[in-house]
Length: 599
Image (cartoon, rainbow, N blue to C red; front, side, top):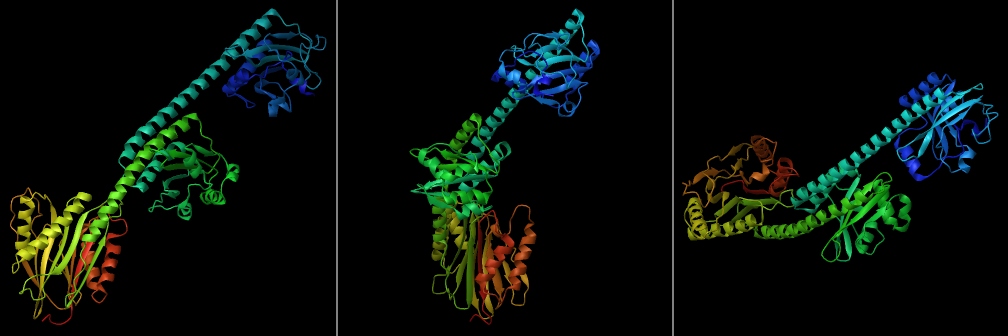
């Protein structure tokens, strides 16, 4: 049977884009569809024919979503190549065809031979959309000559109009669904940009900016990689997320602005650069191709981050499959790049201030004195969050005065706040307390604390927080510890025999707006071989962890390490108790008494 055997009627079918777009919007193809099958059954029953078809005319083939009585191979494939007669003619099948006997009909009434199908009588009604585009034909076929009546014609016309109406409804429904989908995507992306404006406004570090962008775009655009590459002079440097470092980011962290990387090209030209597939990588450097391979990427887009004069860098999104961005995505990514650029500028500014504050904080942490009979060690670890700068400090210095007799002053404190102001106040408090010790020699720590609090109020320093200030003086049978605890963490003492004790006596914290609280000196004789540990809350206070358990763990490690070098022991305690992700600064100051009497 030839290609023309299955033509439903007429001499031509236009292949214009409008008709084909309308046909595609019906969602129908060479698969059986319940509604179209129903129209074929109605035609077969109403006209009493052996074969009935709902035939749709695609660009290269005929498809039958509805059919009755059709034999193989068409019953299984439900399609046939488009006949040559339809390829040669451009006129629409805009008129019904009614042939009593196609064998004696004029040429062109019904195209093609009839041997394979056994078609003798044929009637066809065009199926159109609301613009008159012919989408196909509703056909009735009989295997014997037949005189089609006016009733047959009217019945087929009515069924054809009903079938056309069903196709039009499908087109409208799917078009409306598409519009709703586009509207929903536009709404979701507008919501994404609103979230971006809000979430990025709260970022303070470059790694946090990158994580925030990744969280924002993953649910919508579904990239497998989100990165930031920033301009530094004539170089570009990737923002590496230390919490979740990418192998590629580390391997290719820095490269030239003039190099053959898509990100560098995006910055140099200030344009959005697409890499829709790996074939496009041939124009880039071997390193760029290797980076794609490391990440398993098939496509990527690089969006410049707008700056005052030149882009600050580029935002990179990568996919593990081919991805071409549309106009809406392009506009959304440019808007997102604008928000990202402002967040990057703010993060760079904050990062500079944080580095300056940390340098200042480190500079103010004292070099430890060498005191005969004592081993003194200290540890300071900043908070794991890069934007956190605290007012934690330690101090140790020989007490002044002729009667000091080798005594040493020890302090660990924590100024309220986690910012540069707290770090600056820490420096002032440290100096004020030293001055108070110098001016009040021969007295206990309370006298120095009281003098500091008076100056703090009268000079308008307005510092608040906690501290533990102590003196350690040599005695024939050991060292006498005198301390006052101003709302601070309880110090620990471990004996040479491996027992521990908490020095729990304390008063309230200091604050310039609180009336003079009574302060108390407490004393404890420390035996030779004992170890005293002062620390800030960053060591033991962590969200979701028990404070008492952390202190007990610290005490156990302190007692177990009485023979271990003190600096190494402090590092081990910080590693085990505070861990790598501590939320606050960790400060520890430890003193170990030599075996034997002090004097």
